[in-house]
Amino acid sequence: MSNISDLRDTADYLFNNGRYDEAFIVYNEVTNQVWTAIGTVQSGLAEFSYDYLNHNIRSAIEFRREYNILGVNTIFIKWFNLDVDQTLNEFMFSLAGHLKCLAYSQKLVNKFKPSQVYVEYLVLYNLVLHSTDDKWLSNILKIASPQMTASRLKSIRTNLPEPTVKRMLTELSAKINATDWKQMNLEIFNYMSKIGEVHSDLFQKVKEIVGPFSHSHTKDSSSNFKEKKQHRYQKYEKYEKYEKYEKYEKYEQKNNEEKKENFNVKDATEIEKSKHYGRILGLQGKVTKGQIRKKYLEMISKYHPDKVENLGVEIVELAESKTKQINEAYEWLKVKFNL
Image (cartoon, rainbow, N blue to C red):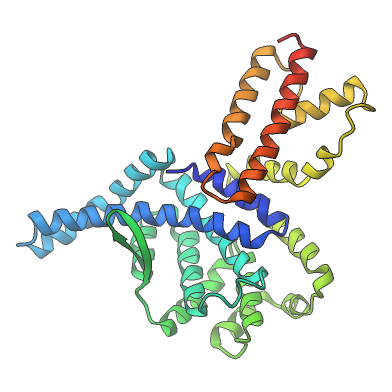
């Protein structure tokens, strides 16, 4: 399996640059990999129950309940090298990015049935509210189930009728508004406005929760919508969980990449070059020769094009561009510090 943290970093970079259709594909890859992991555990437990506990339904149910979380945690570590909390963090932010792409892209907004989108929101809201306890897995499996074929994810089956999904979203939207994820209420409001669903109880409830800002939000002109959306996204990312602060700094660094690409090496001073190339490698303050080498190896391993060769030409080109910058920075630093 891929490094889902790196994949989400790539998706966030594409999203921040307004490339929603491409970001959507990468976010989708992350969420599908997590669903596949969950589905693999469910299939394994179901097969074992059928083979050995089929005579005792109660024992089979208790067996699944006891080993569900344990099995999922084990496979998350094996596949992603992340524990449950870390994987759910990537899952939640990828779901959020996935849903935003659906709303912001004119190509995507009408491509999927609203019922599918609402299910995804409901899964996200349940994860936000229950990711710190063991209820998260049973809750999302009541909403949707990964359907597996030969150890591969075939589809995500919806387990609830649309009216029930909307009713549950109506109830959870108020709870979400009391968390750092309240931005998503604005996103679902925006989505429903775009598809013309403005008369449902869900829309009215979210409108009430979002408040007066919802009116100005629907009147944003196309010329300034991207700028306002970007500001909201950046503000939203600042409230991520503890380990996300470091990644937010990476987003800021990537957003300034165009400026770095325009750096004029010929006219720059030695100090300016040192800062520029050090910034590319993520170096700060005084560093040793060993630290420069170590950081270079970490960066080149993370952004090597081979890691994203299956994600499309555009993403491979991004990786190649980043790798070129890293190599140029390291070559200059090698000469500068006689490495």
